[in-house]
Length: 216
Image (cartoon, rainbow, N blue to C red; front, top):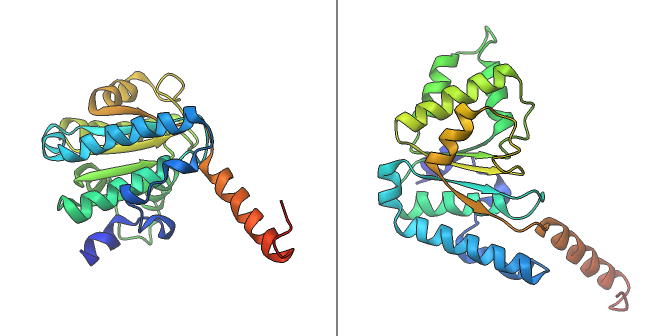
């Protein structure tokens, strides 16, 4: 399990995230809490039947326009659930980092080749691509992500995406978008920022301590 957790490369801020720690009360509006509750329901059902999803190569596409809406926290929670309770290897990365890792293989001083890296990304049990679509989308980026996504599609490997774009605004062509549609359940997240709520609460708590409880 230690090796599996190290391999996953989850950000430190999310290593202890689980579905139980995902706080629906962090959303300020009723609409936000409702959307989050539906998203959690879909993901719980997905995890309850993960053996079937894994066999079919069915993943998740978590999206909302709002940054900080909880998509990455949820993806990390799913990663921990899969590693600890479903005996599944997970790799977590951002779209930008994947492209940067591919570029690094062009350095003559590295031992990793592009083909080896792409093969590793294509074959891991579950690949989580965070902030997909935030990277600079060039023809080269389209070709590399097509290689990765198509390999996972034909190999029936589970891929989980988080994105601030829905599939209609994603700056990739139909080769990629059509595969994502077929291989993922689309899960809509609230259009409000949990990160903003947390920042506001932290600031209120600090000011309350500084002013002896007189800050509102």
